Image (cartoon, rainbow, N blue to C red; front, side):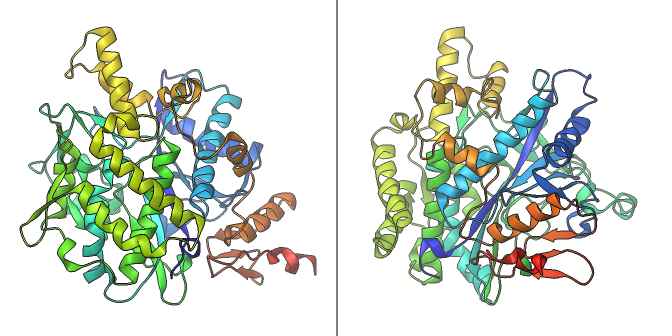
Length: 490
């Protein structure tokens, strides 16, 4: 697969919605109103007119946008979810993701709901114990060994990249499996994905943890799982044909978090692509495999001394920083092939060097450092300690996506954030798709459907069905299908 530019990737983000009073009708009504406004009033996409049964999505629950992304209300939890367009450029991806934030906030404001409602791009509910997804997707070679063998070379990187990709959180959670599992009647009456996690296990606060790198680490209980409602996993196998073709498929990473910092967001994806290149080229030595990835995940997240030591299969130990330097040494073979590989290698190295010297210097580009600095400043000003519940509110407001409310955006306004894209790129990405993947062709077709006020259609990632007789296929994620609308002019 080779070059970074020859791999497509995308990220799905679940947004929490907080309603300040009951006047809008509760969060379920808010997310429906926002979704309807985006499709029916702003006309930014073509809403699904048919149910997507395989995804538990009823008709009219969402659809594809003209920027190549997909916006919908996830029926499991009734939350807004935004899936970016397929991208080949880490900066295109970052802009397309931030465009989703802008679309949601603008809809709230136009509906007059912004004073009482907010959307949050975070990954944990401190008080309810729930966790929200920010799932990464990568096009990978799908040989038979990948999920049996190759993933063991990915786990060490995936559970330790939180040293720069973690978003940070106040406190911790303990998973308690003493809870009651759903009985036969529960399962027979409801699809398994509609049974609440709280019916299977309980989540208790862990008061011994003051601050940790990851919001998700405490909630991951499996390395790999196909049904993840009760088995939060690092990886969720996906073998859909629509994401790839031939010998490629979608690698679906469940362990990821909603980075606010553009630098951390781009670095996370850029370094992951390089490690996937190493895995596909069989260049990672067996000696770097972990003894227990899940233990390492939590140990790294919770280490207050920032030593981040993990145990390898041969019972030897290595620090996460040194482990990542091993990946960099191996990935140097990709230097010079394109600008993204060079940017990722340079900034990967510089970030590790600074993490080793003094992590807090990286407060302008890593989320966990920025959040810890904000929390500590708040503690110094108010005199509260780590066990004060107000710290959870500070943690949460870092992830408010409204620029007028967000603590992260306050850092941007004060010039305390190292940015990798500009506002023009984000505004453009609200209506323009990436121009080097099939998202471009699909976008042109969605624009045509909106302009023609079409009623009978079906849009999916890999095809657009205009009616029972007319299907425009988009099987290759790496092609633009720039002439996809030509058939409509005949």
